[in-house]
Image (tube, rainbow, N blue to C red; front, side, top):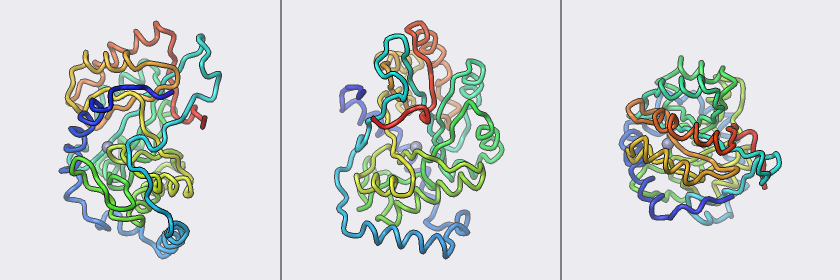
Amino acid sequence: MRITVPKLKITAAAALCLLASYSAALPVKEKSDVFKSYYTEEYLAFKKRIMGEFKKAGPGRFSEFVKNARVPRDKAGDENHKVMAFTFDACGGRSDGYNMKLIEYLRREQIPATLFVTGVWIEKNKEVFAELAADPLFEIENHGLRHRLCSTEGKTVYGVRATRDLGGVIDEMELGARYIYELTGRRPIFFRSATAYTDELSLRVAGRIGMEVVSYDILAGDANRFSAKKMSRNILKGARHGAVVIMHFNHPEWPNREALELAVPELRRRGYNFIKLDGFSLR
Ligand SMILES: [Zn+2]
């Protein structure tokens, strides 16, 4: 189900997105007051135990696509039943806005979507977050506590702030999940690292603590500041059964809604239905 978009294009596109989130993440210190209460004795013991389990493991491959092998649970490949999943990230930090126009469009058109949110974004958007979490049209998933790129050896791309080590990865994943659970009563089952880059060890750790790492197939290009037309073209070009589209919903100034207004009618004409990621299962 992998979409073969030229690699260079993806990388250049992600770079722009990440520069934006990099500066955004800077003011947030490790163990800053906002999340201090989450470092309980119970949590620290839990973290120590997980670190012990993986202490001899190497980091493995570092990539945007360390794992990307999901297919829809139902009838993969049936011409009469084609599905795609729209996913929208809310990174936070300086880019902690809310694209209400986009969300209104998804509601009006009844397009289910998966929303990847960080703890730092939720902190700034508590009311909106509660509203989104209560809407069955949306699935809330984990984009990390502080929007750190998850690398067990502190690797990074595009100068984006990354976790320092295995412990940092656990903080980002587990505390992000606990924060969402505390507010919604539902623990996330998917995790997407800032930039979508991560290493294979992080992937194993995510699995150990009950989450699956998700990347994407189609980069619409909102973070590149592409026009609605160009984003729509990217989506239509990459459209195929089981494809996962990545966009953002924390930038109200980006033309995401306009892009979907162009792409969605054509996707529907081609016979696509839209599902949330929880409708996907492992290959
Ligand atoms: Zn992000």
